[in-house]
Amino acid sequence: MTLKLPLSVKGTLHDHPERDHLKGLSAAQVWRFLTDTSEWEGVADISFPEGGGPVLKDGLVFRFGTFGFPPLAALVTESQAPADGVPGRLSWTAKQDGAPTEKLDVLHAWLVEDLPGGRVRILTQETQIGRPAAALADERPNPMLNGHQAWLDGLISAALG
Image (cartoon, rainbow, N blue to C red; front, side):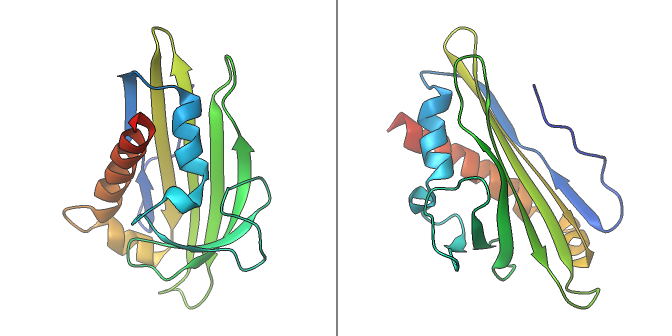
């Protein structure tokens, strides 16, 4: 199972790094480090203005800043822990209102699933719509692609202990 996002068009940024076929890990081991934001050392500026946290759950409101963007108002829209035969799914939306040069809409989704043979797949996909996203998409090296790959690598390292 994979999440599908549309192809990039002007004013949008789509990113979907994936690590799969990782032996020696389970989806449950990775899930802990993905959903507990107190484990996100160096990943993002995150806060919980309405309380709750640090574990991300359905309906949780938080503020999240990364890739040079100020903290955006965010909402967890899906949180399903992995179970036998069921992949873990986590997603949130984030938004920045303002003038067209500042407006940004974001959807970030994660899939963590056990595969046959004691392997695990970790997939993250993010789409951003707005002029700030278009500018970020043109940067080389691409900070979002590299940042998400570093996040995936950090999750794996943390889960392996």
